[in-house]
Amino acid sequence: MIGSHEGTAPSTVRISSALTSNVRTAAVARSEFFEQPVPRRFVHRASVAEVLITGFAADAAPDTFLLAAQWPRGHSLYRTVRGLHDPLLLAESVRQAGLMISHVGYQAPLAHSSIMRNMAYDVSAAGLACEGTPTNLILSATCKDVRFRKDTLLGFQIIAALRRGLLLETVGIGTGEIQCVSPAAYRRLRGGAVATPDTPPAVLPEPVSPVLVGKDIRADVVLTRTEAENTWLLRCDTSHPVLFDHPVDHVPGMVLIEAMRQAAHCAVYPRYSAMTRFATKFERYAELNLPTVVRAFPEGEDADGSVRVRVELSQDAHPVAVGWCVCRNMP
Image 1: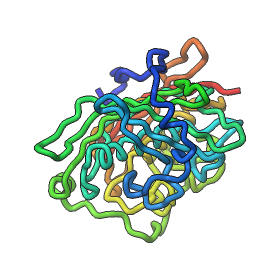
Image 2: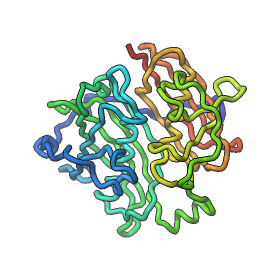
Image 3: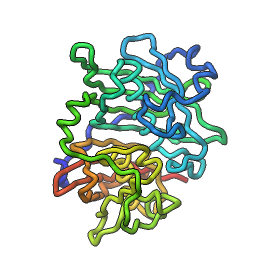
């Protein structure tokens, strides 16, 4: 049960050779598929610089799509370290792919909100390799349990194989479940929640040392220390240009995932590791005006030396989200 020391992770995705089926290489190999980012409104980003998706096409089978993505050599938050892209670029790519599919593939109105119920990914070292140029990737997405009410999209599950190289080898996979909500339904769901102001908070708590969480600068740290072991409070800098790309009335899901990743890194420090496998379930909205407690529970090592860490987030003793992090040792 979330919030306790018991329970197991949901079925986590694993890279499989079974996902290396042929794709429409003639379509995805065109250079213009990577020429420019898609319109930012389709992926719910205010900054063009934060748009990772560069192309979109329906695939041959129903409910299948091809999306192009480009990962930069250097990102302001998701930094390249020791020749490896940040694994959370895959999580953000899957998030953006789901939004692109909902609005362009299934014609969900742009005014409708999208709620990510869960997310998981698994990526290999080959998938994260940064080779001195921006990395062009293909997300081969299959959607399941696609639900409509009349002609309006209600939600779906996405399974996206990450492919790269001339042979479009599968080097990762990401999954998620998206729920689409009308403006009226969202207002009922959120009640009187107020969006973040454009001005930064007056006082932010002191962050933990960036070295503990694999960051270079204090501004990118989302944890602040408490007296309890492996327990922190979420540090929400609503002026952060990436984590809070636009005003919101709750803590964004990618901020919660970043907190889980940083807590896992703290728990395994001083090992250098990358969170190459991850799964999370979001239980409720994380409110901006409430303290968010972040707790990490190391759960042992795998045969390859990777460390498993469960991270739980709560507000007022109620579970907000839980993540299962697998941190792989990197040379």
